[in-house]
Length: 405
Image 1 (cartoon, rainbow, N blue to C red):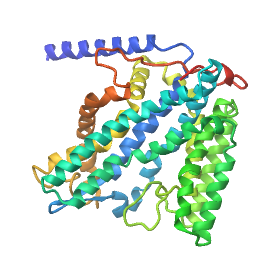
Image 2 (image 1 turned 90 degrees about the vertical axis):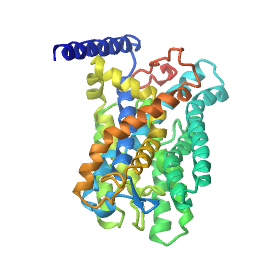
Image 3 (image 1 turned 30 degrees about the vertical axis):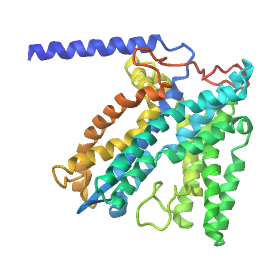
Image 4 (image 1 turned 60 degrees about the vertical axis):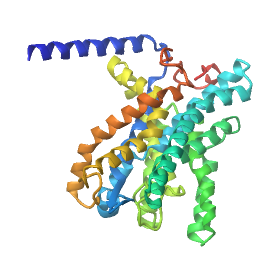
């Protein structure tokens, strides 16, 4: 026991020294709340997928299912872990600050855009390459086409939002001063036409851009200093929550903020007015939490954890479904395991799934170790990554002083 205690204390000292080094490498003016919000958004999406995505083994076939389909009382879980609006809020804030800084430094638009998109495209290329090889290998080995399609669809599902995010990033110069009410009005009218008046269903895909443009342009308003007062956060939180509740209660929108197999309508596929108003409430809460997060991030251990998540945010997001499926496929070698291959129709499944979360995290750590270099632009292992870059809290009227992020 003494030897174990010594080892534990040594590990703690090593972790503390590492946290202190990360803290020392952080510029004093960095707004750590931005990084905390981004980390929360990424981890929320990962945990949400791991909790509500089930791969049920029916003979030699795997099919997708959801506990929300069998246990609707778990719907509030989707409110906690559907955090895409916060990701777009932070993305819009960071991109607009970065573009302002690039212009001030004389950096042309094409160079600025190439630098930002390379952080998205290289990790995506790694996922596409691996799953192309995996899909071909599975089909050649005799796997059922339905199973392969299910696996590939789940693996690539995180990429749809990256396409939207890349498009909004490219349009940042045009969106810098756009009032978020304009894309919100587009979403409202699209839903009125397609859901209220029986318009063509393809109209819903207009909301893929317009819906996520709402939090993105809110991020631009944050950069302009228009959301610094707490009143802005409270208005967004109250108005967004009230509108969402009214849409669910009286307009027939689903209560779940994620897609549920078997339901006729999804709030995400394509985005509906309800998920956009829900996102407004989330953005309001995020803005209200900024000061608390800045205070919490003064702790070296908390800040080190957030900084490390941000360094690997894209890798974690792109590979978390692969980690889930790798664990599921490996488990099939043993047999149908509860919480992994069984129908998610009871509390027993929920309890078993919670026990699988550390296994998923371990599989994700393996993926992270293998593919993290793609997020650093192919940097070699011997090259020390830059832990953080400066971005300062936005003050009203001082957006032009923003530093490149």
